[in-house]
Every structure is written in C-alpha cells, then in structure tokens.
Image 1 (tube, rainbow, N blue to C red):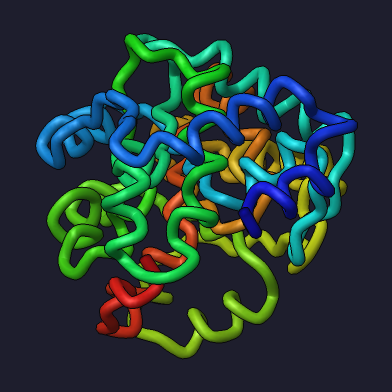
Image 2: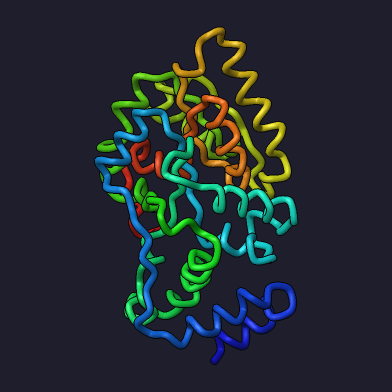
Amino acid sequence: MKRIFHAIKKYLIRDPLYFFLYAARDLQLNHRERCIFYSEEEISRLIRERKSIVRLGDGEIANIHYLDITPQHFSKELQHDLRKMIIGYKDDSSYVIGIPIFVNYSNRELDALGEGKRGLWLPLKVTFDMIFNKNAKYLDAHLFYRTGRFEKIILNYILQKKIILVTNEKNIEKTKNLPFSEHIFEYIACAPINAYDKREQLKRDIIDTIAKSSLPKENFVILFSAGSAKTIIPELSAMGYQLLDVGTGYEAYAHNLSLEDRI
C-alpha cells in the first residue's frame, strides 16, 4: 500500500495511464516481462561493427515520468528525447539500448532480492510494457559493472582506437593519475549535474575534437560517462561516430575494482 500511496502522489495527475498500469502490475506477484537480451558474444561483435551503446536505468525512467532525480532535473525536452530514443529503437539501429535485467524479474523475485527492490525496478517493468520495442534485443545495462566484462568484451577493441573519454572533471582528474590514461587521446569534460542541459555543447566538442585531428571518425571510440547527455548518442551514432555509454564501468578496469556491489 505504501508504494501505491507514493505512486498516487507522483503519477496520478501527470501520468494517469502509467499510474493505473503501475497499480495493476504491483498486485501481480508472478507477472514478468519478456525482454530479449544479447549475449556477451553478440555485444562484442556489435561493438566491433561500430554500434554505439546507450544505457538506461532507474534515473532515465524517472525522468520519462515527470520526476527530477539528483543528477538531472526533469524537462519536457529530456522526456521527449528519451521517449524518441526508446520508441524508435530497432535491432538495425545504429545504437544498442541497455536496460537492467531486472525488467524480467517478477515482483516476487524482486522482493526476494531485498526491501525496496520492487519499488526500484517496477517503474522500469511498467515502462517497458508501455513504450519499449518488444521485438528488439537489448544489452544488460550493468554488463560493464560485472567483474572482467570490460576487459573481455571491449578492451582489446578500444585499445586499437583513439580513445576519447567524456566524463566530468572529477573523473578526468582521477583517470589522469592511472595507467589507463596512456590510452586516452583526449578528454572532454561534461557537467557533473544536469548534463542534458549542456548536450549541444558536448556534441560540438566531440565533433570538433575529431575534426581537428584530421583523422577519420572510424579511428575513434568515445567512452561516455556523462549522465543524461547520453541522449546525443543516437544522433551521433547515426552520423558515424561510435559512443560507448559504459558509465563508470571503465573504472572497474582502470582501478582494478569490482563494481558488482553497485548493481
């Protein structure tokens, strides 16, 4: 009941269709979605074919449903761009969407993971039901947080490229002190919060950095950890740029850390 009470306050007036589906799905303990996920081998192949990756999680789902989150305030423009990215997604898109595998968990299974897990991932399940392409395949959004996956799936590939790291200043300074920095061709700083608001400047910075190199864009791979500015990924990937939204997943390799506790 507590979940439904909070849902009434957050969604009933602004997003009634979502609210009523949320309320219905909350009562269905064994209902599960049937999202199809790529295997690790398929993702590795798609990356080598220069597909981009854009990951969506609970924050982006909240923004779709009119909510502010700590790193990004809600705006109609952001909501529109997120919905456009999702609704237009197909297997032959220039980008692969990643979402958490919890979309396929039943409410009973989410409850077994611990208190609050159903409330965390039920919005994703409902939104998948409403607007996601059920025929397309998806990436596990937490793949590069899992131990050894960054190395196994993309490291050898990106080390053959000129790497541009797009992230906030704090992460840039941390990376410059790591051996991984030897592989970085250029850094591009993004805003630590409300990065979506600076997305056009970030897009220009990426295009200009590669243009100034006088090298083909195919020589580059862009590691992307820039919050909600990730809405530029579908547009840039359609223009021939490759952006891999790994979040802080690259830190697992760079710092020799396991990030599985963040999943």
